[in-house]
Image (cartoon, rainbow, N blue to C red):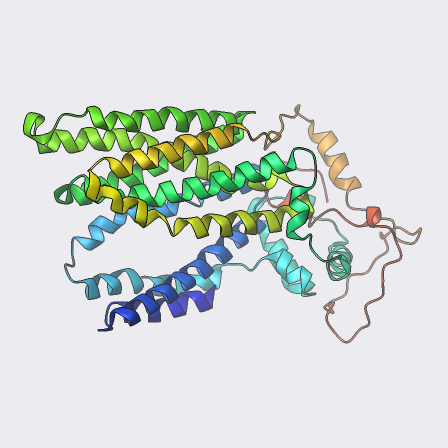
Length: 428
């Protein structure tokens, strides 16, 4: 993450200062690689240090900052008319992120998988202090972290790509989710680029409203994830309806009849409803794609869908270039793709992201937390375990675990990642 920040500043500034077009494209490509490093690493860390509904909100609303950037870009561009100065203006602010980087925690799962249990423990202790969930932290945390690290080291290799196609309704779901990712990514970026075809005189205000529409769509996607059972169906129907609204752009009177401002406003309204629907679906795809497969297939499924979508994203500018045949040709093409994507998402079904559970009493919750603190190992409990300050990757020999997988501790103590719900938890 830090490497991406530093390199992005260097490559971003060079992009606007090189005289050769080939070098311009080269450094712009490197800048994109650096941004992807920061974006991917940051998203993974945020996902690893949150839990429950908080994790869902983080995953879904992570895209909001992209929309905020889209809204800010016209304001930044209005101060500089030179491309060189604009590249500097959008590259140097990363220095602020380098300063803030020292307060960004690393991923505890990543640390544990590499045997750095004491570093992971520091993050866990900071987490329970902030969230007020100390009663969820077991007293044998050192032993449990050692077990976690040993389990990670002894784990079998991750599932391969072909495994995601095996299972009940797997083929239908995987095909539909791949098609949905590729269609919506193309439409999302294509429609953002197509805003300039409405009127270059209104480019700044149109870009601002495009970002604002994306934010509304993301919030609506979060609502569907948290509150509905058939989120895929609802977002599919939303895109189908919005696609037909985008077709209505052909019914907008010409500027010579109603004036340029009214014409641009009506065209933007017809397009932004579809853009809002697309952002809704992308937020659901980002958060809920991995719900379609088992835990061991989540990483390869996420990797597969993202790579597939990025490949087809290369075609978005070519669809936008069809504006030479008519102002509304690209919008019609993007609306058609959105409708096709809506049909694909309507065929997907997955369990509710957060099942509705009955309320539990504080006493029952306390009993559950206390029982989760004890793990039987070799017919002995761990209440007499004395924590050690030595890390698992020290000179001490790591012994193989002879106990079955069912006796291992729960996955990284999920109860500590969420804010304390009740004021007084059970005693430690």
